[in-house]
Image (cartoon, rainbow, N blue to C red; front, side, top):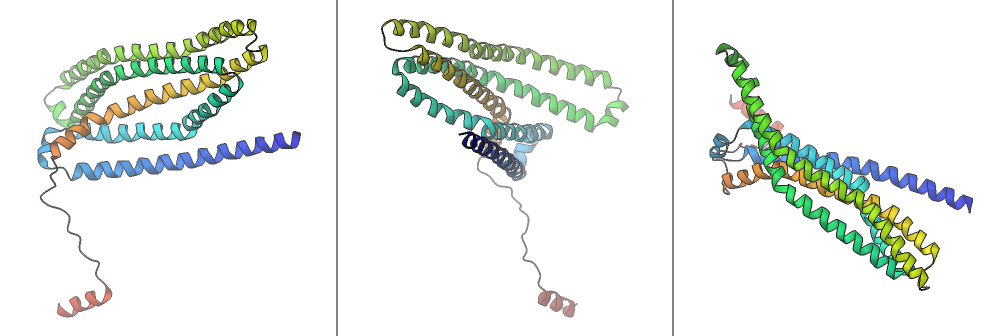
Length: 287
């Protein structure tokens, strides 16, 4: 028995290391692929789009967007995917042990998940507005830093600093309500732990008095709650990261698609076939 337990522990460690390694590789590979595709897409857009869009915004979306996607992929494949899959194991097992307490646990999980989803969806549009202010901040800072000599020549350092502070104040004014809603998500997630334990003990005592459950089953469902609680928090964090990561590039990409209008640049790079030794020799002879 001890040997089997040790073998299972080693197997778990090996699987965890393999998952972490391949998740890291996949996230980095996809990050570079998305960055390259975004750069190629932006370079192929017509000049009408580039004249109306600041290059600092495009750089900010390219770097911050790929970083957000990288964090999302890495966290999902390292932790969130296993946590979500464990829920599909715990719920059927709880139904097999005691379907009454299992239904209670399932209903509470659904209620808290719906509440968290509603709050996060409400913050989606607000976070998009925040990201627009971040883009304005990047554009203004990029203009000032790219023309430092001109700014100093016209003695506009104070004006540029005041303008940047004004944009930063607008950004904070838009960000604070989003942080309040995210704090509410944290409160809901942590409050679900206490409410679930109280509900399991209350319903478990009533069922125990009727002979429909045992003390061991009640304790086991509390243990299930201990396992399900990190998974629920993980799901909320994943949803929050997805909203925060996707809100950043969505607005500018929507403008890019609208500005492109299916058009392609008037000129493309000429792809000439590589010259072999025979063709090079014939050209030298002609010269």
